[in-house]
Image (cartoon, rainbow, N blue to C red):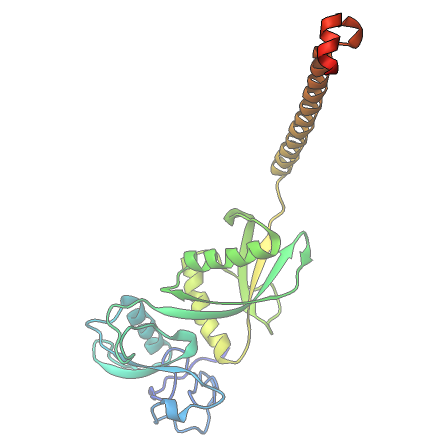
Amino acid sequence: MSSISPRNYQIGVCFTCQLCMYCGLDLTLNNCNCDKSIKPTKKNRTKEVANFRNLTYKPAIVHEKIKNTLSNSNQKYGYKLDIELLYNCTLCSAFIPSSPTDGTSLPSTPLQMEFKLRMSIKQNKQVLPFVIISFTLDNPNFINFRDKLESYICEQVGLVYRNEYTLAYKSHSESGAGTLLGNEEAFDEFLKDYQSIVAGNKKVVIIVILRELSKKRSHENEVSEQESNDESENEAYQNTKSKKQLKKHIKKCIPKEATLNENEALVGSR
């Protein structure tokens, strides 16, 4: 893989992923003819890049998550900016922080990120059709990302537990098994790869590998189901038995005509 050449940051480019905010080209290893010195506004939006966010970075009050992200991008692309100084930058829609203000500065507000994914589920050596999912997370981390995915998994295959599946990810155009996604460290790498893949107008695939149920759990399920059936059959039997006994008791309590004396027979015939 080619190394990333250092460059000066330009306001018309996403600070975190080098997406041109006009033509949508990933400028990590490419270049375009757009005038990237022009600040993106609502009036100069294009069909390729409809959304953006202007950010005034204030190191004294900015959220720590945002500061770390911008610091990593500063190092990755060789901007050589002093992160302890105030500066303006632009973010693309894949990495837009939320703010209750006009969006120019971000005091201690959580980071918000939108995910658009294709989910592939492998179950019992079979691969189910892709499911297109999208959601937004505030201050995303591995736990809330996994929990959100799990809700979509359960919609497709029924109730599953966290120890019953493995997660991985890759680009839709990439071959192979993908990259394992199982902890916070792997999730941090996933966030970087996600931005890079999306910036290249490619789709991100989440791979869910369901583990086979253990023999013990399968046996427990069979026993539980059998016990439930036995209880139902026993209850039905008891109900039938009770009805028969009630009918027998009623029949026994009604005196036959042959056993009535003359006065009782006359009363009954009135």
